[in-house]
Image (cartoon, rainbow, N blue to C red; front, side, top):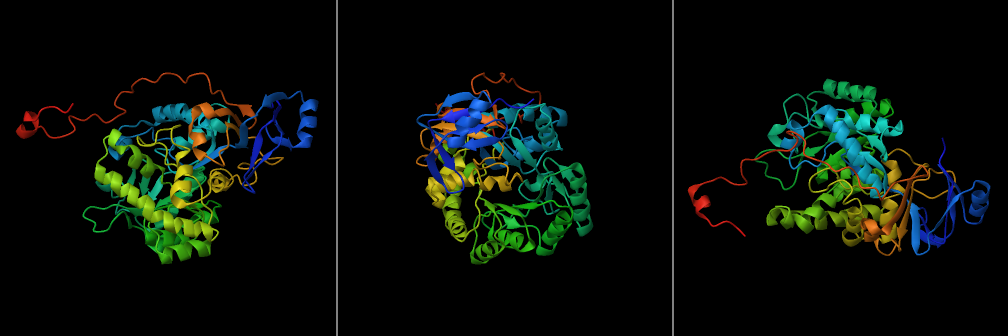
Length: 446
């Protein structure tokens, strides 16, 4: 059964092609049918529901180009790797994806998954069994046996949590083909990681160029794009040279990395929201002042090269790393736009384009979502005020007057079901510090 027709009048439309905001009506059902003068005629012929958007902006739905739907906001990799069950994770993810829609996210790229939960949730959404944004998904992230961001939790072989270790060229090829058979939309590679006693700031590259090219060649032969987690200069450079289709983070770029990215024109998803939220609010959630300072410095240091890449024509996309305890679902999907404006130096309109039109690349729906054009899918937001002046409007629930996905309105009023605790789902600790005699003699903090 098709969607009811809607006519939204009296507001301004954000054009994610030109970056301008213009007064115009828009008519849609499951797709956008008419804009401007023709919208009234379509509405009259289709008994459209009329919506007064005076004082508001009609814009494409947000596209979060870096999310983790299956993780359920872990506080640590220990929790994520050892305190999750596959069936329950899928049920919990089906609950959490509704929070994204209510935050105005109508499409998102889920970079990697525990088990194959994200693929199942994606398919359930497409079948109409679960309400959620359009999903494009990676499978288990490809790691090398040297490990990476999960340290000694990473095994020497096999899979754990969201990752699978590939030790040889043959294993790389086999795993890419296995994931293709499972129906992934992307292959993700953790090109950098953290290893014990390393003497480098940030992360170090743990894949070589030949290995990266093997991933790309195998995936591209199967029609699947490749995305890389790259948090240093050499990894970003080599991912671009290897033919990666998108790069997450791309922090700490040097001249060689910037040159390679520009030459390849590879889209970048800075994903600095995690760092920004922790830098802003870490003191309230138990983060150390040193970590807050480090993340502020990472944003500042990386923003210069990211802006240079953008000015040279490299697409920037908006990703938030939502799915961790620092970035809960539905809370911070707007925050990356503020980073893009305040730190990288984009205009609000350019940041909105990064979060809409450019994001269509990540969900492999170019020409279908991300812009308000006749024939496109009707993924639409109605926002009070003018986000081309203030992108933080998108982070105010009271400013979000309407969300449509495929022309169907999203219920923004009915509270989601109350959630109780899940047995053994979270890490339980004995204490936050060792109970030495000196420690227990100290008076408690007030």
